[in-house]
Amino acid sequence: MAAELRTDAMAALDLVEATVGVAKPDSILVADDVTRRYGGLTAVEVDHLEVPRGVITALIGPNGAGKTTFFNLLCGFDRADTGSWSFDGQRADGAKAHVLAQRGMVRTFQLTKTLGRMTVLDNMLLAGRPQGGEHLLRALWRGSWRQQEADHVTKAYDLLARFKLDKLTDEYAAGLSGGQRKLLEMARALMTDPSLVMLDEPMAGVNPALTQSLLGHVTALRDEGMSILFVEHDMDVIMTISDWVVCMAGGRIIAEGRPADIAGNAAVIEAYLGIDHGASTTGTIS
Amino acid sequence: MSWLSILALALQTAIGFQGASYALAAAGLNLHFGYTGLSNFGHVGFLLVGAYGMAISADQGWSIWVGFGVGIAASVVLGLLLGIPTLRLRGDYLAIVTIASAEILRLVANARPSEPLTGGSRGIGSLTSRLGFFDPSFIPEGTYGVGKSFVFTDRQLWAMLVCWGLVLVVTLLLRGLVRSPWGRVLRAIREDEDAARALGKNVVVFKLQSFVLGGAIGALAGALIVLNAGSVSPTRWIAPFTFALYTVVILGGAGTVWGPIVGAVVYWFVLDLADGVLNNLWFDVSDTSAGAIRLAIMGVGLMALMVFRPQGILGSKKEMLASGR
Image (cartoon, rainbow over all chains, first blue to last red; front, side, top):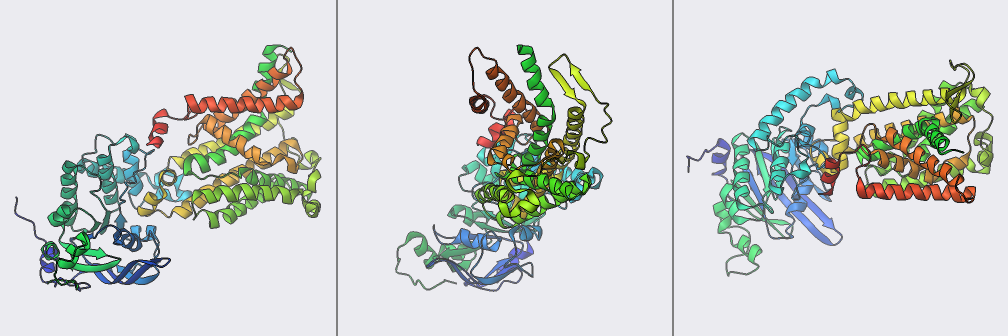
C-alpha cells in the first residue's frame, strides 16, 4: 500500500485518550445531554460527544442502538427532547435541517434519495450553491443566474467524472443502478461544498467492488480536509477507514476510541454479541 | 344536424372561452400537482375567491382592475392561510384541508347571512354592463367563422381572445419559472422533500410560493369566468370542477408546460362531441342522461389514457417510467 497520508488532524488524535466523552483537540461538532424519547422508550441519551475535525469518525452499534436517531437529531431531521450541540462553533440544536445544510453539514440517506424524474446533471445542479435563480423573483431574469449556473455545470462535470458518472449526465436518476445512485448521492452532497459530510450507512446493500470504490471516495474527502461522520454496521469497513470510532448501545455511547481500541473493547463486544465474556463491562479499556 | 356540425360545435367549445378558462385554471393546478407534487384537491376554492372578488367589486361599482386585484389578493390570503399550517405536514393533509375549505367557501357564499355580499344562493347577476368587459372590444359587431356551425359572435370572440391571451402570458411566465433553478427545486420537492431539505432548500417556503402562485392563477381564471358570464352563482364552484381540472392536467400531461392547454382543448372537444353525438342518435337520450353519459365517456377515456399513455398527451414516457422505480 502506498504510504499512508497522515494529516495533522489524524496525528492529533493519537494523543487523545479512548474514553467516552473525551475532549478532542479540534472538534467540528460538540453535543451535550442529547436525549430523544418515544413515549417511555429513551432512544438516545448522549451525555457528551465531540466529533473531531478533518478525520473520519464512525458511529457504530448493534441494531436499535440509536445511531440513526442520534444522527437524524444532529442534522436537524428529528427533534431532540433535550440537549444542545454546536456545529463549527455555532449553535446547531433547534436549527432546521436546511439551515444546517447551508452551514456546511450535508447528509446522505441509508435508502438512497436520488431524484428519479430528474436527470443526473439536474440532481447535481440542484445542490449547487449559491444559486440566485432559486429566488422566485429572480428566476425569470435569466441573466442574473446564468453565470452561476455555468459555474455549477463545470463543477458538476468535474465531480461526476470523479465518481465515473460523467457519461450518464442526461439520464434520469431513476435509470441508474443502485450503486450508481449511491455514488450520485455522494457526488451531489459534495456540490454543496460541505465541511462535515454525514453518511447514513453508505455501504448498506452495496456489492464488495463498489464498497471499495466508496471507501476510496470517503478517504479522499478526508484528505481534502472535510470531516466525515458515518453510521455503519460493517466492522471490516469501520476498521479499514475510520480514524475514530464511537460505539452506541441502548441509546448511550458505550465506547470511543481509535479502531484498535474499539476492536478489543469488552463493552463493544458484549453489545454486539450479547454475551458476557467475563471481562469488565464498565465502559472502556484504554 | 350533420356530423360535421357536431364536430364544429365541439371544436368551438374546445378552442372557445370554455377551453381557454379551463386551460388557465389548470395551469395553476399543474404548477401545484405536476411540478411541486402538491395534492391540491380544492383548486376550485381559488377560482371561487377570484370569481367573487370580481363580482363583488363590480357590484360595488368598482372597475375590473380592482376586481382582479381583490380576487387575486383574496386568493393569496387563502393560499397563505391554507398553506402555512399544512405544507409542513405530509401531503395528505393538504388534500384534506383544500377539499374541505373549497366546500366551506362555497357554502359560506351560498349561505343566507352572506346574502348582502355574495347574494347567497342566487349569486350576483346582471353585471355585464357594470363590468364593461365587452365595451372595449375592438371587434365589430357580427359573427365570425366558417359555415353555419363554426361561428363565434363578436363577444365570444373577444372573450376567447382575451382569455387565450392570458393563458399564453401565464404559460410563458410559468415556462420561464419551471425551467429556472427555482423550478428545479420544485421538481426536487416533488421527487423527494427530504433530499431537497438535506441539500439546504427551505422546502416549506418553496411549496408555499408554488401554492400561492398557482392559486392566484386559479383566481385569475375565476375572475375571467365572471367577466364572460356577467354573473356569479355558488353552484358552479363544486368539487367536481376541481376533478375536471385534474382530468385536464393529466390528459395534457402533468408537469409539462403546454399540457394544460392541450388537455383543456381535448377535454372540451371530447365532452362536447359526446354531447352532440348523444343528442343526435336514432333514439332519444334525455339531457340529464346525456350529461352523465358524457362524463362516463370522459372517465373511460381517461382510464384508457392511463393504460396506454400514462404520461398524458405531451408527457415524456421515459420520465413517466422513471417515477415507477
